[in-house]
Image (cartoon, rainbow, N blue to C red; front, side, top):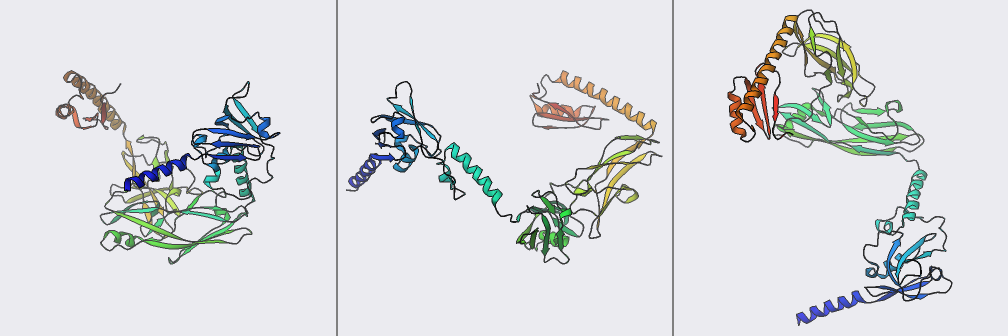
Length: 470
């Protein structure tokens, strides 16, 4: 009984799917019948668009050549009545190309040219749904997107504000070692708030306020970049002890609510409340390293050399932005021994690094350790990781040259020994590495993948032997 019922259901479904139907395209003056396998012309009105196109009763419509319509995803005979009628109707001011059998004499196509003019406003309501977009012809799509652009230009000039923030602090052994998506002083953590404002009438001011004591920020037009370009502010929101507590067994959600008020000239203010969150990662090295100082040429100095050192500075890109920055010399313990020169800050954080020249004291041979000392608005200071330049006597330079020549000779001799010992050094990497480590010219070595890294005695750098290198 159940099987009979099931067969009855399937039979009914098949009969329903295969039931033929007829659609009429009134504007073109013809009808067509679909039986699930073929689409056949059943009527053509005299003096109609279809008649002028030489469409005849009995012709079978095989496919639509143009225009392309995204909603037609199956053969015409498999479309339902609504889709088939739409597909076979020439759109206003357009032509519909049909491939038919048997074809008219001298061609394989019939071209139905619509007599309907293009409407003055073909899209009175926008935007269209995805389903409606798929029914547009290419010409209609062009008109639609032109209408969207027009609507955008005609839209009331209302203020717009976009806000993004994603900040992570990294703590190791009870110390803050880095901030991703922001920065910090020794006192406060500063998340970077990325914002973009749109004021077509001109920016009057952007105000941020919050529950943090003393927090108040106003961006005036001279502090803004071009309208619509993103910018960032980095307010002090969390004391550093509160951040460190996240890794001390007493974590609390670190969230702050800020109120943003955007005022464009001649427009009512746009006001929003935004939530700023801080994630804290414990005992994980920071992927962010703050290094606003890079020493360029010369790479080495001789005693008495008067050539100034080229220094690349990007103190203005630090978060938070320092109030002042100074190039200093430090000793081996990191204590400031001499302040060399104040450093330029740049107009804003989007400016590229700045180049300055700094004279060094080269009266004696020594290691010059240079760092950037930054002072922040909260009164704290920060010292960057020192960068070094060696100041050597002529005798020391000559000694280095001899050592380099010796290291080069040892390297050449080692490679000859390697070639003599192993025809293909990478065939047995453990054996090769063991032999390299025992070689008298080698200081250290390691293997990795299909590479052998080795350091010859007297050399300052590792060399790499590439396996399978053509």
